[in-house]
Length: 181
Image (cartoon, rainbow, N blue to C red):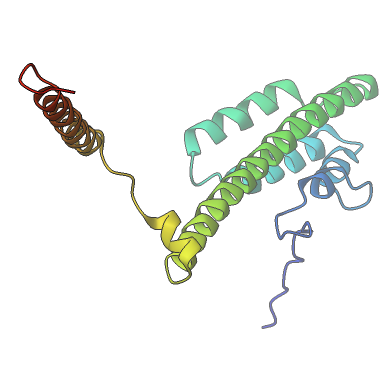
């Protein structure tokens, strides 16, 4: 028994599924395949098949069953051609909403990948900088905490006051009342 392999979904240059082509291609797109029909039952069956594949009828069986029941009410077997065209337009709108949802999901995934990549690049850059060179060592040094800076400032101020005060006392003592100029 020979199994047929399914054709791969078209891909964008960065490897994501090209949802625009999947839905909108005039020859092989899902919208063209679903709406290119002359019978309401075929339109309904095509829509059910596509939605089932995209959303997985096994994952949400209750929702899928409600969707199928809604389609049977919306697209009865006996419709005029005008009503069939209107139903096809409605299905096209639903399919385009699904396409837009999928494209938004891809955009979010790409943005998350880009953020993740920049975080990874920063980590790699930090690791590379910590391995050598005076410039990288300076960047890697931590600044003293506020408490430590206050202690250093206090020590410097105390030493300065002691030296300055000692100088004044020495000058006053030397230039005091008991000395003659």
